[in-house]
Length: 276
Image (cartoon, rainbow, N blue to C red):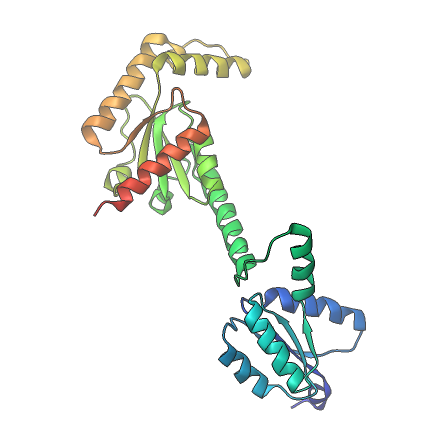
């Protein structure tokens, strides 16, 4: 073993979660000591008195204990035992929790791992948003099986904005545009209940939305896309498809805000997934 390693002090980082927060704080503090170094030993998921006692039995007298324990009883037990053994120790959380209790007027929950859970939730949402972008408007048919939710409907039935709202909640969403007279990808028909949702809309409302969209783009509103009769036929064809060839839930978005549509999809999804 390197003699220099033997001479370095050891810092024991004890946490009831991942230990990442405490370790990062210690490393940031060590940077202020230039070339001086210390050995770090991180012990995560410490959530019982027995585990604390086992760890303290391994700690040499010249080591430093640094801990982040949100449970008051465990924190107090570690402090008492460290003082009894005259071990140097630093409680990173207690001073902050005490001041926050004064400022906020309420006690902390004492639930370990909340920050880690928040991080996981955040990255899950980011991944879902990226998935929605990659699978918007039928861009990636081969990835449909990976979607939590698939939306189908004719053009301008709010598929993309609804996908964005659901992705913000952490769901991987793909959406497929229906083209009049063209069958959807066959993979859709093989998916289990609770995965595919069909969106429909009043033909008159759809016609108005399409014409407004083309006007915003400075484009001519001629053609089947904005022809009253063609739009009516398109919507009716999609409804026939939904009712005769699928068991997909059909949601009418005519008078619904995007957030309302997303909430209705999740409500129906929960009902379908709860069925035996």
